[in-house]
Length: 207
Length: 142
Image (cartoon, rainbow over all chains, first blue to last red; front, side, top):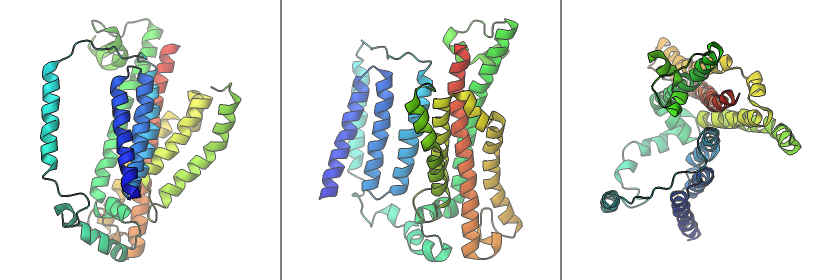
């Protein structure tokens, strides 16, 4: 019963934060509130006994992403431009898609149902066998690193590729920027100022 | 932020415990919640805190951009390397039992190395992304 009350409270808090994020135009406030959103979801995951997921959400969502967004804020204006036009068609599409999703919810297995499809396939084997067959007490770790080791390798490569992409775009960009300052050449021609600041390397090659 | 004594003292006190906690999460992942991804992010957070308070240059003196890049590559290679070694020992790709021949030690060593690879890559990628964004701004301000 208490768990249900806590769940309802946290979900209401999530909706409140989401509405506040949509309503405000101050981007600093949006970043801090998205961190709060992640922290609230982490609390929900703890309540669902998914401690590993909660841990990741708190560390990545509330911690690092907030800092990275703040680092980005240094060269983005602090306020979002308020949009004046109200697009009626977009509103209808949003409400229609939301209604379809709500209809689809009716076909989902009920929450925590042990007889549902996902809990009948490989999950029982993992839960029953992993402790005795692999001698690792934490089931999440065995599934992540041993049973699904190949998937985790893919995830690591995704993180690696993302890092490489950012480095090639931004770290390379500063070098071109500095060199351009030294030689007094313009890095980009015919590109808008902001874009040329973000992509001087790729654009500089063309120009 | 280096001028503010509160930031400076708190950052100095917190730096080592955060890394300690990250290492605990990294190497205790077999027994309690945690693992390479979370540990990587926590350790990166310690270095980012240091860089925010004492400046990017001082952060770069601890982990240089070149070392950071090598750590990124080494993490992925360590993960893949464990798979290749287990193949060379007669098992399947990423079949940790083949590493030592026994299930208990093989799985433990395999998972430990693989998580270490994940942790290294995540730490260095987070640091690289932070320095790329923050350094980009600092360069422009000059």
